[in-house]
Image (cartoon, rainbow, N blue to C red):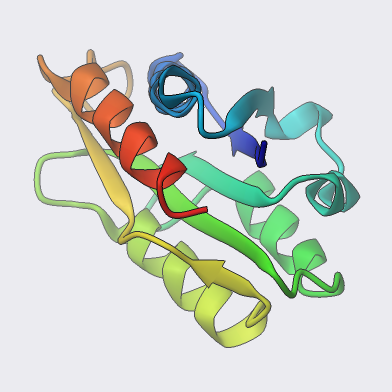
Length: 151
């Protein structure tokens, strides 16, 4: 069974909740097994132990947070050929730029990591604390289910 690493950065818990919902969706299909880890305790080399990598960040000043940027930079040095991936973010209405910037960096700098789905954006009601808009956790779970069929 393919193994999926879902890594995230979260300050308020919103991005963590989305990461957990994505993993729940993946695990529910019984086609893959997902593990969720905070980026602060995850080494980029751990990606080599998984078939797929899903990376999530809160949108911070129009892009991913520094810890995620650094993680992606370190992934550039690894051979991820044959691995699949996807990205997600949490953002306020109409501002999914973190997803777009992560996708661009992966396309340009980590060509071995094949993106299997467009980035997922979860909307929060407020900039600093949220909460998530109603229904976002269910959408994240469905995103996870769709990912499990593509890895």
